[in-house]
Amino acid sequence: QVRLVESGGGLVQAGGSLRLTCAPSGIIFSPNGMGWYRQAPGKQRELVAEITSGRTTNYADSVKGRFTISRDVKNTLYLQMNSLRPEDTAVYYCHLHVVHGGFDYWGQGTQVTVSS
Image (cartoon, rainbow, N blue to C red; front, side, top):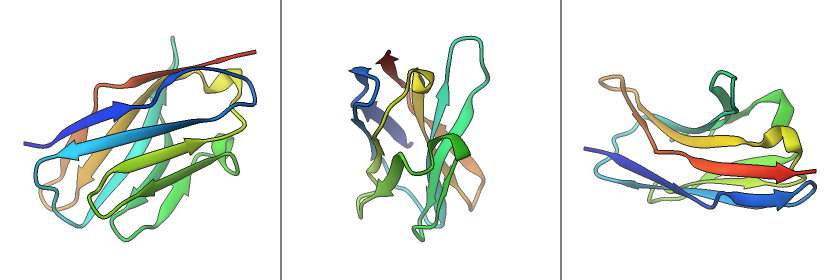
């Protein structure tokens, strides 16, 4: 069984930076994709950024140029968030999709709050 544990959220002023980390446990088979989603109060969960096991990345238009997604050889996932805005305030979730079998896993979420 795969578990995903996020960390790194917190309160930051507009213009500041945070780095989110998602540490997986268990065996993760390739090919796969990992990503960060976020959900603000009263809104649907949305994709922020994703990265495949081949290191191909994709970003939401709202974060391009400000956020950077990366992963290491242990499949630890990172999201470097710069130039944060109040509209980035949300609970951020780590996600893993394993292609063979179509398995999806979610972390418990970490709160990011950006004050103006």
